[in-house]
Length: 218
Length: 114
Image 1 (cartoon, rainbow over the protein chains, first blue to last red):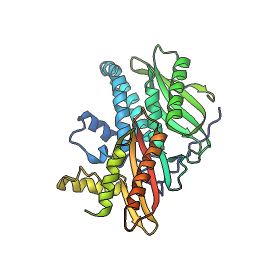
Image 2 (tube, rainbow over the protein chains, first blue to last red):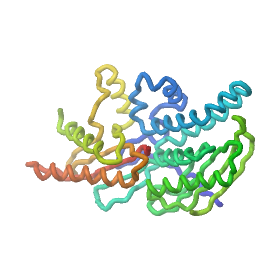
Image 3 (cartoon, each protein chain N blue to C red):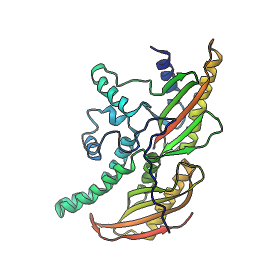
Image 4 (cartoon, each protein chain N blue to C red):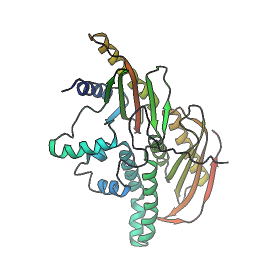
C-alpha cells in the first residue's frame, strides 16, 4: 500500500489551548523514566500537569511490565542487546506522546472549537496495540491531513512480536484493537491500518528483519 | 480574587464533574506553567484550582480547557458534553447578570485518553 508521508506541521492551536506540540513540555523521555523509577516522588507539577508526559509515563509503565522478564534475561546474557531495544521503544514513546496536530471534533455550535491532540490519539493507539498479548508497539504514525474533517487517514504502526506468536494473527489482533479504539474515540476517516512487524524477540534478543504485514481498509 | 479566577475555578469544578473527564490540566501556555511551578515551590501554589483559562474582551468571554478522558468513554462525546456544560453554565450566568457577556468561544482539547 502506498503511504502518504507524515504531515506534522508542529503549530499550536491558535484558538484553543497552548499545548506544546513538539516536545514533552520541556522534559525528555529519560527524565520521565527516572521519575517513574523514583515512584514519581518528589512530585513534579510540570510532569504531573502535562498530558504528553502522562501519556509517556503510562506507555513506559506498560513497556516495563512486558519487558521485565526479558530484561532480566538480557542482564545475565547480553546486557547491551536488551538495553538497546528497550531504549529504541522508549525513544519512540517520547516522540509519539508529543501533542502534534489538532484533530477536530464536530459540534453544531458556532462557539465550539473541539479537538483531540494527535499525541492523545497516538497514545490511545499505542495503548490499544499494547493490549494484544505478545506484541509491543514501537512507533505510530497518522498519515494524511488529520486536521481536515473527512480526509482519509492511514494509521501506520511499527510493532514487535515475541517468539511463538503467529505474525499474521498478531497483526490482525493489533489492527482490530486499534480500529475499535479509533471508532470509539475519534471522527477520523480511516483508509487503512498498516501494521509493520520489525522485530521478533527471542528471550529478549531481537531477530533482525523487517517483516511487513499490511492490513487493507477495514 | 478576580472575577476571572473565580469563574475559572467554577468551570474547573464543572468540567471535572462531567462524566468521562478524569483530569483537567492547566490550559495556560507552557512557559506560564513552568513559571507557576517554580512559584508554586515557594508559595504552595501547586494546588491551584483555576485550571480552565478564561479571558474576556469586547468580543465576549473565551474559555479554553485541556483535559484527560477516561478510556471507557468516547473522547469525542466527552468533548461535546464538556462544551455543552460550559455553554449552559455561561448562558445561565449571563441571564442572571446586570451586564451579560456573550460567549465568544469555548475551546475543549483532549490531551490524553485513558
